[in-house]
Image (tube, rainbow, N blue to C red; front, top):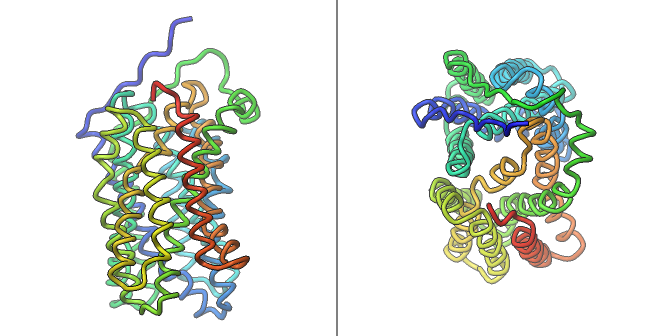
Length: 391
């Protein structure tokens, strides 16, 4: 049987059109995230319930990973993105009109499910469309525009809130989703056919045939995602521990995020030229150093410097997890496998803040930073051991 033909690469101009809806969709998510707990409180939810409601966004993404893979495999990337935009628009409308916190919670969960479908569709398309020697740059750029959208979204949402109140952020988010769908509709069909004999493999077959990859490289990627999300939790908590005000804390997080955003394309370029492990291992080690240094920072300036170190370490690995998933995804059943891959890695992302909370509760915030540093070193070891040498 002849080998599967290499997927046609669409060229950077066409790929830029793919990145535009990605940036818009991420902008929508960024615009609405800061106001979700405020909306819940306005509807009478307790502080704890409001925090859980925000967590439903991540829970929806984890729960939606496998169904998203099945949907993309069945209907294709373009239709899946349009369906995701439709669900997001409906969920945002429902959130604006929600009469109580229960309805709002259902809308937030739907937003998470829609985000899972959108993310999987984008990753699946670029996995097929970009040739191997440009794959890391294509996927790291995808992650980069997502980070830019998430960064810009809260500012646009704040502008909407200044005009229409708290729910103005939902209006901004809805407009961004509509624009994302409009761009997708105007593109040529971006689907890349999978040529493989016989019917597409089932989810059970994918898990069985790729169990070793998911249990080794997949678990290493899970640890990577847990460390990354822990960084976003432990940095503001340490600022609060030092008594820094909300404005200073936001500035520290903003500086760290800006350094992170600047590195997405260089990270992808190095991965394509030198290899995935050459970027992933140092990324985790730098994050480990950042977590070790954090307890020794006692002023706003020193915390900001540690934030820069963490942002640099995180930015070094931009697109790493998506690229690794693309590298090991089979040509047949690509979307289904990526759904399983995202289930594993999204579980890691969701568990990171929980790890910080558990370690801080059992000991202290210093114990939590040390535990995350150990996990980062373990993740570096896993990447060194299990990343394919050809990658």
